[in-house]
Image 1 (cartoon, one colour):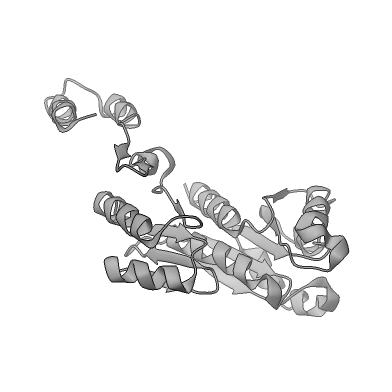
Image 2: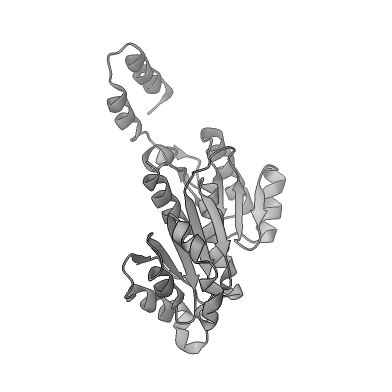
Length: 251
Protein backbone atom coordinates (compact mmCIF):
# COMPACT_ATOMS: atom_id res chain seq x y z
CA UNK A 1 0.00 0.00 0.00
CA UNK A 2 1.56 3.30 -1.09
CA UNK A 3 1.20 6.65 0.71
CA UNK A 4 -1.61 7.74 -1.60
CA UNK A 5 -3.70 4.68 -0.85
CA UNK A 6 -2.96 4.99 2.86
CA UNK A 7 -4.08 8.65 2.93
CA UNK A 8 -7.22 7.71 1.01
CA UNK A 9 -7.97 4.98 3.53
CA UNK A 10 -7.49 7.31 6.49
CA UNK A 11 -9.63 10.00 4.85
CA UNK A 12 -12.45 7.50 4.39
CA UNK A 13 -12.29 6.70 8.10
CA UNK A 14 -12.22 10.41 9.00
CA UNK A 15 -15.25 11.07 6.77
CA UNK A 16 -17.17 8.19 8.32
CA UNK A 17 -17.35 6.28 5.03
CA UNK A 18 -15.23 3.38 6.25
CA UNK A 19 -15.63 1.64 9.62
CA UNK A 20 -12.51 1.51 11.78
CA UNK A 21 -12.68 -2.29 11.96
CA UNK A 22 -12.69 -2.59 8.17
CA UNK A 23 -9.81 -0.12 7.82
CA UNK A 24 -7.80 -2.06 10.39
CA UNK A 25 -8.36 -5.26 8.45
CA UNK A 26 -7.09 -3.61 5.26
CA UNK A 27 -4.03 -2.28 7.07
CA UNK A 28 -3.15 -5.81 8.12
CA UNK A 29 -2.23 -6.55 4.50
CA UNK A 30 0.00 -3.58 3.66
CA UNK A 31 2.99 -4.57 1.55
CA UNK A 32 6.46 -5.13 2.96
CA UNK A 33 9.45 -2.78 2.54
CA UNK A 34 12.14 -4.12 0.20
CA UNK A 35 15.63 -2.89 1.20
CA UNK A 36 17.47 -5.16 -1.21
CA UNK A 37 18.85 -7.88 1.04
CA UNK A 38 15.71 -8.09 3.21
CA UNK A 39 11.97 -7.56 2.89
CA UNK A 40 10.75 -5.97 6.12
CA UNK A 41 7.26 -6.81 7.33
CA UNK A 42 6.27 -3.56 9.05
CA UNK A 43 2.71 -4.76 9.55
CA UNK A 44 3.70 -7.68 11.74
CA UNK A 45 3.18 -5.45 14.77
CA UNK A 46 -0.38 -4.72 13.64
CA UNK A 47 -1.12 -8.40 13.07
CA UNK A 48 0.73 -9.89 16.06
CA UNK A 49 1.32 -7.03 18.47
CA UNK A 50 5.12 -6.92 18.12
CA UNK A 51 7.53 -5.96 15.31
CA UNK A 52 9.57 -8.37 13.22
CA UNK A 53 12.56 -9.77 15.14
CA UNK A 54 15.95 -10.12 13.44
CA UNK A 55 17.76 -13.45 13.55
CA UNK A 56 21.32 -12.14 13.74
CA UNK A 57 23.31 -15.28 12.93
CA UNK A 58 24.60 -15.12 9.38
CA UNK A 59 23.81 -11.41 8.93
CA UNK A 60 26.49 -8.72 8.76
CA UNK A 61 26.63 -5.79 11.15
CA UNK A 62 25.72 -3.47 8.27
CA UNK A 63 22.64 -5.53 7.47
CA UNK A 64 21.48 -5.63 11.10
CA UNK A 65 22.02 -1.88 11.52
CA UNK A 66 20.06 -1.12 8.34
CA UNK A 67 17.17 -3.34 9.45
CA UNK A 68 17.18 -1.77 12.92
CA UNK A 69 17.05 1.72 11.43
CA UNK A 70 14.00 0.93 9.32
CA UNK A 71 12.14 -1.05 12.00
CA UNK A 72 12.84 1.58 14.67
CA UNK A 73 11.51 4.32 12.40
CA UNK A 74 8.18 2.54 12.08
CA UNK A 75 7.54 1.26 15.63
CA UNK A 76 7.34 2.45 19.24
CA UNK A 77 8.13 -1.04 20.50
CA UNK A 78 11.45 -2.72 21.20
CA UNK A 79 13.62 -3.80 18.28
CA UNK A 80 15.51 -7.08 18.73
CA UNK A 81 18.25 -9.07 17.02
CA UNK A 82 19.03 -12.52 18.45
CA UNK A 83 22.17 -14.69 18.32
CA UNK A 84 24.70 -11.87 18.01
CA UNK A 85 28.22 -11.91 19.45
CA UNK A 86 30.09 -8.98 21.01
CA UNK A 87 32.05 -8.22 17.85
CA UNK A 88 28.85 -7.90 15.86
CA UNK A 89 27.37 -5.64 18.54
CA UNK A 90 30.44 -3.37 18.48
CA UNK A 91 30.10 -3.00 14.72
CA UNK A 92 26.34 -2.38 14.88
CA UNK A 93 26.79 0.18 17.68
CA UNK A 94 29.01 2.29 15.43
CA UNK A 95 26.19 2.47 12.91
CA UNK A 96 23.29 2.66 15.39
CA UNK A 97 24.53 4.17 18.70
CA UNK A 98 21.18 3.73 20.47
CA UNK A 99 21.44 -0.07 20.55
CA UNK A 100 22.15 -2.06 23.72
CA UNK A 101 23.60 -5.54 24.21
CA UNK A 102 23.10 -8.45 26.61
CA UNK A 103 26.15 -10.69 26.28
CA UNK A 104 24.59 -13.65 28.11
CA UNK A 105 21.45 -13.62 25.98
CA UNK A 106 23.49 -12.73 22.86
CA UNK A 107 20.90 -10.11 21.91
CA UNK A 108 21.24 -6.64 20.40
CA UNK A 109 18.20 -4.46 21.05
CA UNK A 110 16.66 -1.01 21.24
CA UNK A 111 14.32 -0.98 24.27
CA UNK A 112 10.95 0.73 24.20
CA UNK A 113 9.79 3.06 26.97
CA UNK A 114 6.74 2.56 29.15
CA UNK A 115 5.45 -0.72 27.70
CA UNK A 116 4.85 -2.99 30.69
CA UNK A 117 2.19 -5.56 31.51
CA UNK A 118 0.82 -6.14 34.99
CA UNK A 119 1.19 -9.92 34.67
CA UNK A 120 4.24 -11.88 35.82
CA UNK A 121 6.37 -14.16 33.64
CA UNK A 122 8.70 -16.38 35.68
CA UNK A 123 11.78 -17.78 33.95
CA UNK A 124 13.41 -20.72 35.72
CA UNK A 125 16.50 -22.61 34.65
CA UNK A 126 18.07 -25.79 35.94
CA UNK A 127 21.75 -24.85 35.95
CA UNK A 128 24.20 -22.05 35.28
CA UNK A 129 25.14 -23.70 31.97
CA UNK A 130 21.56 -23.04 30.79
CA UNK A 131 21.84 -19.28 31.39
CA UNK A 132 22.32 -18.15 27.75
CA UNK A 133 19.04 -19.76 26.74
CA UNK A 134 17.22 -18.70 29.91
CA UNK A 135 18.38 -15.10 29.61
CA UNK A 136 17.36 -15.03 25.95
CA UNK A 137 13.86 -16.04 27.07
CA UNK A 138 13.74 -13.58 29.96
CA UNK A 139 15.01 -10.59 27.97
CA UNK A 140 12.69 -11.35 25.05
CA UNK A 141 9.67 -11.35 27.36
CA UNK A 142 10.84 -8.13 29.05
CA UNK A 143 11.37 -6.32 25.75
CA UNK A 144 7.87 -7.37 24.74
CA UNK A 145 6.49 -5.64 27.81
CA UNK A 146 6.23 -8.42 30.40
CA UNK A 147 7.25 -8.15 34.03
CA UNK A 148 9.83 -10.89 34.45
CA UNK A 149 11.28 -12.64 37.50
CA UNK A 150 14.33 -14.87 37.08
CA UNK A 151 14.99 -17.98 39.17
CA UNK A 152 18.23 -19.60 38.11
CA UNK A 153 20.13 -22.75 39.17
CA UNK A 154 17.16 -24.60 40.67
CA UNK A 155 17.56 -27.99 38.97
CA UNK A 156 16.16 -31.23 40.34
CA UNK A 157 19.56 -32.36 41.64
CA UNK A 158 18.83 -30.07 44.59
CA UNK A 159 15.04 -29.92 44.74
CA UNK A 160 14.99 -27.80 47.90
CA UNK A 161 16.35 -24.88 45.86
CA UNK A 162 13.21 -24.97 43.70
CA UNK A 163 10.80 -25.43 46.61
CA UNK A 164 12.08 -22.20 48.12
CA UNK A 165 10.33 -20.37 45.25
CA UNK A 166 6.85 -21.90 45.51
CA UNK A 167 5.19 -18.53 46.10
CA UNK A 168 6.65 -17.08 42.90
CA UNK A 169 5.61 -20.17 40.95
CA UNK A 170 2.07 -19.76 42.27
CA UNK A 171 1.94 -16.05 41.42
CA UNK A 172 3.25 -16.30 37.83
CA UNK A 173 0.80 -15.90 34.97
CA UNK A 174 3.05 -18.06 32.78
CA UNK A 175 6.35 -19.85 33.43
CA UNK A 176 9.29 -20.58 31.13
CA UNK A 177 11.36 -23.54 32.32
CA UNK A 178 14.80 -24.02 30.77
CA UNK A 179 16.76 -27.24 31.31
CA UNK A 180 19.27 -29.54 29.67
CA UNK A 181 20.49 -32.99 30.74
CA UNK A 182 17.28 -35.04 31.16
CA UNK A 183 15.01 -31.98 31.23
CA UNK A 184 13.10 -33.06 34.34
CA UNK A 185 12.64 -29.57 35.76
CA UNK A 186 9.75 -28.74 33.42
CA UNK A 187 7.65 -31.67 34.65
CA UNK A 188 8.34 -30.82 38.29
CA UNK A 189 7.33 -27.19 37.81
CA UNK A 190 4.33 -28.29 35.78
CA UNK A 191 3.17 -30.34 38.76
CA UNK A 192 3.38 -27.28 41.02
CA UNK A 193 1.98 -24.49 38.83
CA UNK A 194 -1.58 -23.54 37.95
CA UNK A 195 -0.32 -21.42 35.04
CA UNK A 196 0.91 -22.62 31.62
CA UNK A 197 4.50 -23.89 31.53
CA UNK A 198 6.64 -23.39 28.43
CA UNK A 199 9.49 -25.90 28.45
CA UNK A 200 12.74 -25.00 26.70
CA UNK A 201 15.24 -27.87 26.29
CA UNK A 202 18.91 -26.94 26.01
CA UNK A 203 21.83 -28.71 24.37
CA UNK A 204 23.64 -28.94 27.73
CA UNK A 205 24.62 -32.43 28.87
CA UNK A 206 26.92 -35.38 28.34
CA UNK A 207 26.94 -37.67 25.29
CA UNK A 208 23.65 -39.50 25.84
CA UNK A 209 21.81 -36.20 26.04
CA UNK A 210 22.35 -36.04 22.25
CA UNK A 211 22.79 -32.25 22.24
CA UNK A 212 19.39 -31.60 23.80
CA UNK A 213 17.37 -34.34 22.18
CA UNK A 214 16.99 -36.23 25.48
CA UNK A 215 15.66 -33.11 27.23
CA UNK A 216 13.37 -32.35 24.30
CA UNK A 217 11.84 -35.84 24.37
CA UNK A 218 11.43 -35.74 28.16
CA UNK A 219 9.61 -32.43 27.95
CA UNK A 220 7.41 -33.60 25.07
CA UNK A 221 6.51 -36.68 27.10
CA UNK A 222 5.86 -34.77 30.33
CA UNK A 223 3.17 -36.29 32.55
CA UNK A 224 2.35 -32.81 33.91
CA UNK A 225 -0.65 -31.26 32.22
CA UNK A 226 -0.19 -27.79 30.78
CA UNK A 227 3.46 -28.18 29.75
CA UNK A 228 4.18 -27.20 26.15
CA UNK A 229 7.61 -27.42 24.54
CA UNK A 230 9.60 -25.32 22.07
CA UNK A 231 12.70 -26.32 20.13
CA UNK A 232 16.17 -27.02 21.54
CA UNK A 233 17.94 -23.83 22.76
CA UNK A 234 15.01 -21.70 21.56
CA UNK A 235 14.91 -19.26 24.46
CA UNK A 236 13.60 -16.58 22.14
CA UNK A 237 10.62 -18.75 21.16
CA UNK A 238 9.84 -19.55 24.77
CA UNK A 239 10.04 -15.93 25.89
CA UNK A 240 7.98 -14.72 22.94
CA UNK A 241 5.21 -17.24 23.60
CA UNK A 242 5.22 -16.39 27.31
CA UNK A 243 4.83 -12.67 26.58
CA UNK A 244 1.91 -13.34 24.24
CA UNK A 245 0.15 -15.55 26.82
CA UNK A 246 0.78 -12.96 29.51
CA UNK A 247 -0.66 -10.19 27.35
CA UNK A 248 -3.74 -12.16 26.35
CA UNK A 249 -4.51 -13.28 29.89
CA UNK A 250 -4.52 -9.63 30.99
CA UNK A 251 -7.37 -8.80 28.58
